[in-house]
Length: 330
Image (cartoon, rainbow, N blue to C red):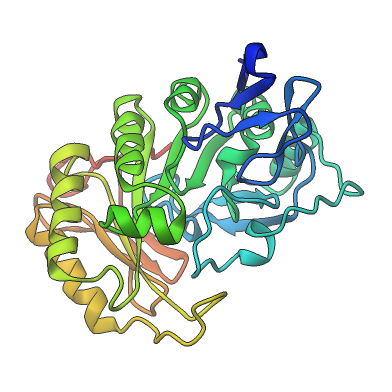
């Protein structure tokens, strides 16, 4: 597809990758800093130029309900369309200088996944929406070779991109960073309603979705906000959508802020469970991330850190009561 819309009468193009819909005259770049109007066409300056590349457990994304215990080839580029002051990958996300000496073609990226025994490719570390043309070219090849595709994203994709994703993207972990539209707009430079819309659309398109909220005490952890978040996930996305509650640690522009306490995480977990969510997990803390059957309570998957030590699922079902457990298991 074409990732931009020409507006020749205004001598500019409109980038369609995310909901900022940046309007760029010749030579201008968008908010992300890495998509540029070159000769009246959109050029993704980071295409083929990853800045971080690792093999991670899929649980680290975090994705808990797809291929547990498997490896995900994970990469990102420079650039981002948000300005989160707590970003843990700010060295690349808030950077726009591209190292063109490093080039990895889409074909080679998939080869690397195969060589490393990875069952999926995760587009992560920075915001993958801004390098969507590169991601999709990789993803289509990966799909042909039986490798799954995962977005780890802030959820600011345009509806056009979500429509385009449904044929090749298998799963996404979407950040729900706050329940305050003003905070999203003023601090993060995004939008809450846009992220909620993205979540609804992805679920509707059949993409497996998991949601992550980084809890920052005093910023987004009030009972009211958490109750409304949980009600939104359960009521509009589905009680089966996993909610990952992660502990904040001081980083980037928030190094003087306290770490999130385990008590805050446990309080939020109870709120999620009280809202009817089947699967609520804690992250960035030394606790088990176990999956239990929502019907009979049987322990299905035992996770210690990022390691799966027990997986009792049988063809995606609870071995005790035969309930189908939501997710992608093969």
